[in-house]
Length: 375
View (cartoon, rainbow, N blue to C red):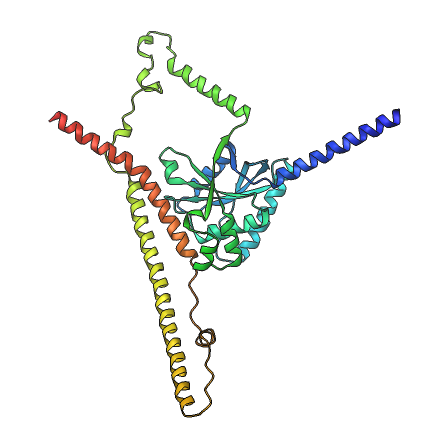
């Protein structure tokens, strides 16, 4: 009896271990659906990007993936690089040293992506696509790129966005065939190059307790009445300390410089798009001209063979259109990747302008109505 009980308990234990292993494998294969960014990592990213402004800043993201959530716990910056190839070797050595140091202090040392700074939402570049592709190719899709916009952060809104390359784009990029036919077959357009993931912020319980304590201390200082002869003159003004006090800063009528600079960048993006369209139109004209010439050669040989058959002579061999195309070496279609990135960046500029111009126009019409009532 004892042996049978031991056998049954061992079987149950083995079944439990197998279930745990299957659950772990299922969790590891689950796709990432959201990103959780710790407050410490967000502050590190903001500090590094602000200190390097107006230069570009980037760094490594470290954390863990748990089920469908990618948890980013810390980050460290990359050093500035020049065009020297030796800097790439130094960057690799620097990254390895940082990972080893974090491992020694029992910090998360698993790479889950990278971050980059941007200005006025200008981040859809060839460099970002190449870097993110290498990350997703090596980490199996369990990684993202965090884009931090310094301009929107300076306006009081900490801008953090998480992106990854779509699966359709990964397949086309791997084949390196950005032709019109390949884009249509893979249903790839400028709107589905990147996939944006929802991002949330997380702090430890100790940090949350400290924030509440700091807030309580500030409220206490604002409402304290000092003792002494001048006690009646030392009461804080409630209109300046209350969070519900009226604030008229949002009623300013001047157009934000952000809108003007975004419009100028939108114009540059449209000019780049026109240039790409002109290059593509030139290729189409060249192909059409060569195709017409090939058809003319085929028709000439056919008519010549008809006259030779009438004279009783043997017909000449007629090459096919494909053979003549290979002999004439038609120009290849220019890659459409640059056009996709330009269109995606133009769409981003339009969305940003839509977000900021609507409130501005509403304020202008409100001011116009108030002036009519006053007059």
